[in-house]
Image (cartoon, rainbow, N blue to C red):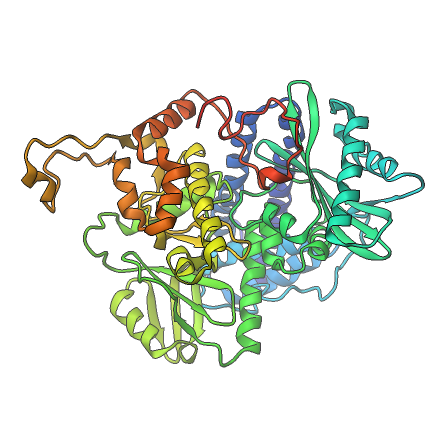
Length: 591
């Protein structure tokens, strides 16, 4: 029988094993990500969807395996803090030469928290702050490529488009270059920005998502930075430019927390995120990491941002969030922060029939699904530890009464065992109470588009109540209440039966059989809660939502394997008079 390993030897073997598992996970992540270009070129949307699902599952699968391996290696010492502190030190030394050291630190934390289920943090065993106050390695290659203008703006645009591997796949790259140059010139004039453009700095790799591809960078005109996004579509005849985005808000929507993650090659994520931050200064660092697929490290950054806010804003308390209280979730936030925390209640009020496990499955469905720019991304956190003094008395009373299964009190601290953290939006019902005429009309119109966007992405929101929708700072309507959400194809859309007795119509309960998955679109107009001119506007433009025909036709299209491209920019921003043969919502199916 072999001698047990010493503490030092255990730490060496454990650190080496973790480093090897991280390296293997990164290689697998790269392999999936780099398939995106081929998927786009070949219009293999089914393959792109499968790759997205595989990549989302990758991290958890790796952590599951390495947790089992580490438990086997450390055996009886697996819960020894001294061994883990030594492992952390050795592991930190081994990742200093990596270009993705920050992701490696998060990987170590993930395994540590699996083993210890630590309440709060343990700085000896976790990378609470990065070990490297500045990048430990010099950048071996620039994230972006510089294109200096030496001739016309058309030449500069052609240089940008021609620098990517897709250049030989364009339907007509000269025509597209000319159109891009014209758009830049006219839009800069419209925006009153200085000219002429003297150079472009463009991320070297294309951002792929769903059926779209995007070239991202920045222009300089008289030393002023101007964000630039070029949207590409794939038609049967080749790649075409569909839109040019030149405003921060337009590109911010492209990187929205309501959208699925990009597939983009990022050997040095730190530099790519810092580049993106220059054109999206109001985006959190955490949100940018999440948007390019590094959601686990995004959570790490989000937690660090939260700790920093708590440190610099000692008077900012957690309060119950504005809006109608949810029957399933307790929702709270701090007034000076844009994050919202959601905890599952111990008991759900009638008529809610969903279970705690069922609610968690709904959030997992949203995580894995194409969010179509309409579902708020939620990050799940466990074992969060806060000072009791940071909670308002009213919120503490609510938590003591309604969340005993989720929180517990430890001295002067509150430990949250499980929470979903989201970006805060304004509940739609509250927004409409104060919105002026034009703003209210615009948002009501976007509400209809949001419901249809969700439908063609195979999502039915369930409770179509105004309070379950929110409005982002860009004025976009999104959905954030997931306890009744389900795949559209699981619903049975029915017409309301005609009654032969007047008293049936007055009954509080249905006088006919209603199955578990039955949905009656005719009732939506009552549930939405719109009144007066706003109700009339919605009925005029989205009356088909109250008819089973729309819903059944959408189900048939999804069942037939049709894919729909939901544009992350307005129709007015698309190339006028030019419509590549790409299946989009509203085209060819009548949806």
